Length: 181
Image (cartoon, rainbow, N blue to C red):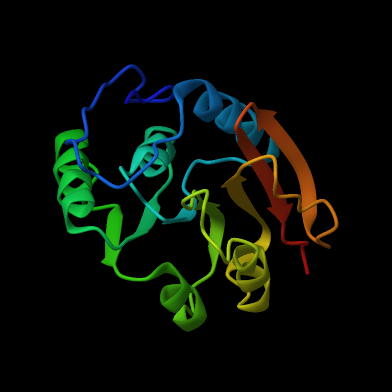
């Protein structure tokens, strides 16, 4: 796993075997961040990485200047790896890790974020609930961006907040935007 841009660009980390995560490929991650940086300024933003996995997306956000990083993950081994990597990068003071169920967190959350990323397991049965909950629970600040990673079999182009889609083979990113008030 490699950080592809920003202050920590080129840094490599090896997650322990057995982490139940599918890290976003470097090519897809590079494409994601190229698109994101054309949509918003990442410097100083408040972010939420649901289905945190290895923490890869949060490290990229920190590398590009994000100020507050909330990460939701339920696997204890993954959380230990994320904590260790955050310490190595010197970003542990910016990172708030919550161990728990993503859907429970989303239903109870009262915070608003500039950017939310969801990289759920591709076989997740209720993946379609994610964009619904983000907007139903007003989790994004005005002009905030939500990105959902999924396979080509999911299509969110009819969602009222859908903005664009980027396809990287088996990995697709759907971008949603919260309109300004």
